[in-house]
Image (cartoon, rainbow, N blue to C red; front, side, top):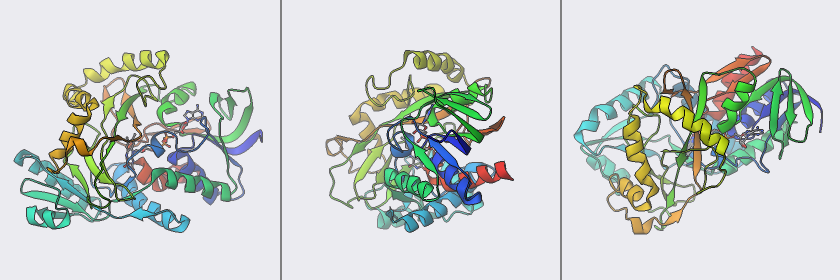
Length: 398
Ligand SMILES: Cc1cc2nc3c(=O)[nH]c(=O)nc-3n(C[C@H](O)[C@H](O)[C@H](O)COP(=O)(O)OP(=O)(O)OC[C@H]3O[C@@H](n4cnc5c(N)ncnc54)[C@H](O)[C@@H]3O)c2cc1C
């Protein structure tokens, strides 16, 4: 392997690859190496998500998420069209389950307008015409620009784009130490670099701490479980989402249509005790368990979020029946017996600001010495990735 590069990126998820791609776009001819500890790209959140191309109406107008999701949606669509990756356009309806949720629905609408996102208020009759399976209490929202794609296909195509531009994506290359201008791999190999970008997802805080960056932050993992339905293809035609609880950074259990027309329920946002927690004991690390356990009390006592409410509503979702019945509130014809096939779980890398006990809602990027650390590439960073990469790389290189 080449021992030096202009840029080294840690992590071949969608964010690391998008950053490498943008760097090569701005600096054609630069040497760029992406180091990935797994044997393939998209092995973690980037390949284990809902694949929903979000429109960008959930987020407060002054956030990075608002701007970068709206722009990222367009950019990802253009990329997919060029790369021959299929994008489906079911759109999304956001429905209410009680009159109390109507003010929150109106807030979403106002945010959509402020963020320059196409969004429509609709009544029950219009909802029925758009998606006969969905139910709402008097009003709903219609987002025509919410789409869906296969996340693994998108990330694989992005990796190919990076290779085509001359970047080198190295698999099985776990970074175990970082110094300004150099990284060390498990086999002892050292690579020197002009600049380092840490896009290590669930481990981004650990790597940042090695560089004395982001020391007030810790990653908290939240597990997302999915169940597929046995419904005929295209029985569900639109994504159906609830009104989210604005005190927490998750969107609530929803129904999505996959790019192949299958109905899928999930994901949960169940607090996890270690990072790559995909099964009963898979990825278990006693050290991580200790780290997460030490961070949870700050979160538990946080005044910023309804933590006990979150735990009370999320833990029962380990039960398939309970989880599917949550989706029944949005679409009454959903039955637990129809949603028996488990999907691949994903784990959200959610950043906690330890001193305040606050879960960071927006993307967080911190500079270090000759390095940049992507600390909170939370949902919808898959949608936003190309716009986010432009924002970050253009900020580094001026
Ligand atoms: C359940 C779930 C559903 C979601 N749904 C959506 C959605 O519908 N739409 C949307 O836009 N977003 C969604 N998201 C969010 C989206 O998936 C993430 O924001 C995005 O994938 C983050 O990408 P990433 O590249 O930062 O992280 P990752 O994909 O986790 O990539 C990080 C990479 O770094 C590697 N790595 C870590 N440590 C090291 C090391 N020491 N050395 C080398 N490599 C290392 C890892 O192996 C990994 O491949 C969802 C997320 C989850 C979990």
